[in-house]
Amino acid sequence: MMWIVFGIVAIAIVIAFLEVPSLLKRRLRKELWVFSILLLLGTGISIAEGAQVKLPNPMDALAFVYKPLIDVLFGFFK
Amino acid sequence: MPEKAKIAARQFAILVFMFTAGSSLLLAPAMLATPAKQDAWLAGILGLGAGLLLGLLYTKLGSLYPAMNLAQYSEKILGKWMGKAVMLLFLPFPFLLASLVLRNIGDFLTVYIMPETPIQFIHILMLIVVMMGIRLGIETIARAAEIIFPWFIVLFLLLAILVSPQIDLQKTQPVLEEGMKPVLHGALLFAAFPFMEYVVFLFIIPYVNRPEKVVKAFWAGTSMGGTVIVLLTALTILVIGPDHTAREIYPSYVLAQKINIGDFLQRIEAIIAGLWFISIFFKLIISYYATTFTLARILNLKEYRILVFPLGMLMVVFSLVSSPNIVYNMTVILEVWVFFAGTFGLLLPLVLLGVAAIRKSLP
Image (cartoon, rainbow over all chains, first blue to last red; front, side, top):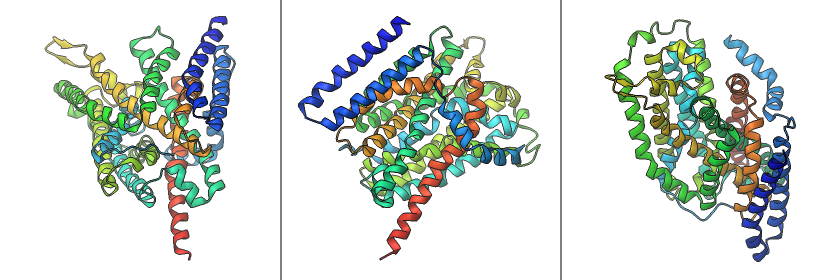
């Protein structure tokens, strides 16, 4: 568990080292913000997954949204 | 912003070909044989027909604004904020497509070849190569596809020729045993996966150096890729039979395991598996590319490359979360995909074309 968190944070730091210097040099402030937020989000979700938190499955949501249509169409093929 | 890059129509055709073969090379035989049984090849041909029509739709939409990608002209056509909102809804489509394609290769490797390796590490290794490709840009991707294309053809012919002694024509009979319904069912699944996913090519079309050649290239890629899938499906049915095909998760691999020339040339399936590594790599890279550029346009970023690594982290997680197991993949996702792909691969382009036509007719 400790090692998973450590590994993910290490990866995030490496990614930040690859991207941030060139962004700072070119003064792309909005890009820097977007990058930081996405990277934090990615790190957070990866750690949650590594800690075996049950994350919601987007396909379940889609299955719920399209359920009436699926029932009609695939009912026809039964 | 699209990059400043140009690719040849021939390279575009090869990218379409690779995308069509993509993960369908692994999944299509079972997907078609489950409803259509021994008529799976027929369902494949019908689906391919639908794919060619969809190709026309996308090239028509792409020709409205030849220098822009989907995310840019949806803002032109629907207005700035409406366009951005629609693109925000569209964003999960290429993202989940890429995640599921990544999951396919992970599932394949952990089920058949490396059962003790954690699937996450296969995903991460695959994504590292993909992310390098995207950071290098579309020209590099297209050239890589052009270089690898002959190898793909050689491997495919090798597979087709080496299993051909075991073909048993009896296995396709009786034709249309249960009427057209199961065939149409298979054709519909095949039209959604992979043909409606072609919408991601609306991010590649602007780079083709001769826009007038896009239609021809699109059709060439679609028909060749579709033919490969239909041939493979037919071979699977002819060699291992419709029931076995429908029961297997990845029948193409089982087909490759059947290769046996004189009890000497056998067990070369790991070499043949290079086929789907190649095609899935390109399908993944193209859908990832579309994800990156959709997000870059929604946020008006000047530099798309910064999105690549953070999106990759998210993608590894979503490739694990969005498909909890293989049964889910073959049942729930397959049915949802018809409508999910239908919404963004058919409805969205039609609406954009319609609105653009109405706006044009107004003074």
